[in-house]
Length: 601
Image 1 (cartoon, helix red, strand yellow):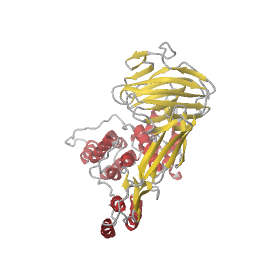
Image 2 (cartoon, one colour; image 1 turned 90 degrees about the horizontal axis):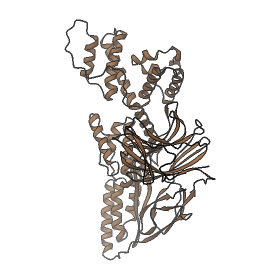
Image 3 (cartoon, one colour; image 1 turned 60 degrees about the vertical axis):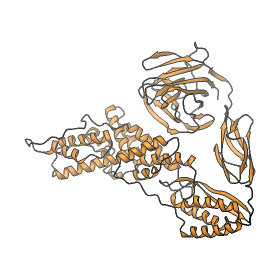
Image 4 (tube, helix red, strand yellow; image 1 turned 135 degrees about the vertical axis):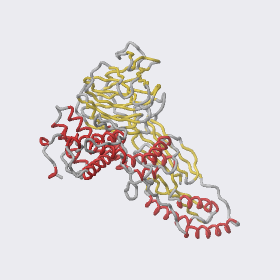
């Protein structure tokens, strides 16, 4: 690609943009370039035109179009239409006419992100290409001539990055493939010895269609051969064979939210057929409403695209033969056999150190083969470290199978202790350091021992109030909750505040999302993309404990004892602390803060 690039000084960015030559703005002669090459050219261009805001805006908009798969696909389609129009006109179009055709075509597409109808293309050709004096039946113009208007390309770009990260992290645990057939499953099997039967679950995890088919066949055959030889084994084996016949036992509680995310990622990455396939069956989870809306949108916008195929699981006639033989054999044994009681095992859970947290269940008795999900929750001042005893691992939630008595211990560690408190406020004194006010954009006031902030201008202005302090290295803890209004919002803790154009912003939302950004000279720069976390308590009056560390250039954000993000950035070394909120949708949001403590690291 290197030989196709032009020197930056040789490019007329405004002229290339007007003519729709987005590739050429970045020095490429075709669409055959990588995301890394595009990013390098973007960095060089922004530096070269840092003193020209108009050209910078053009560069940002064209970069957003080319960097997101869906918008890049529509742009390349528009370029192909322009080639077609040039061929049909004999290649004699003047530059002014070419500008007009491109402007009309691209404005229409970039406002709707859909393929332009043939009537629109004919109307544009009639408008610009017929000779003067020709009587033309005008088709009413429904597009705008006011210039390029990409539909929230920054949001599309962030969504694309999140979808790519999801695809990178979510793969088949057996073959490492990412596709629309991934599901969270486990493979049951039964072993019987004379009159005693054991039901087990093997290899629980995320697997693709091909790997599920191979594993379900393996465990189905094991059950066919060894699972019939007792009364309980007979009944358990039927259930195990049915589950394996369907490609493993799908854990709906975990699978349905996962499939909803899988459909979203495929849609963002431009794999419409695969996204439709994911949503072929209704989902029953907290995202079911969003999944239904996404399915309706896909069916409406891409009616011509059929869902990708997902193979059906069949073990063949061998399954039926063994099932019948086994049924006859066990039926005969049942006449003389004895029905044993299911084996019972005991689960106990412990916490180290005492009082540092709790486990979702205190234990109890379970039948053999039962699966139990354990979740470790940290108390204030602690963070989960690892499991020990009959379980291991460092993730806060684990799945264990009760095939023997188990004792599981959740180990926590204290968050780094502080040497001294630099600043604290429980908001009981309404004459404190925080500025209170009320205007058309929002308000700050005290109520019931909390500091309340409202924001009445979704996605336009931020409501905030200053501590009027100055900190360098510190740890900060506070509590925050949603009081009313939309949960599509940001609860913000702004640190190392220099002025309204320079600071760090740690953000959580009422619907379970978080992000980390900085503002430098009035420009937002993302340090951590918007992501969802199940550790964030959601809904009205749900309290979350926020823990922030700013030590030298090391920054981190933890919520309810779980580390969500950490990184390194040395842009700002000190500054004030600001509490703020912003509504992203609806008419308003109201949040509250309490018990802020800023301590030495």
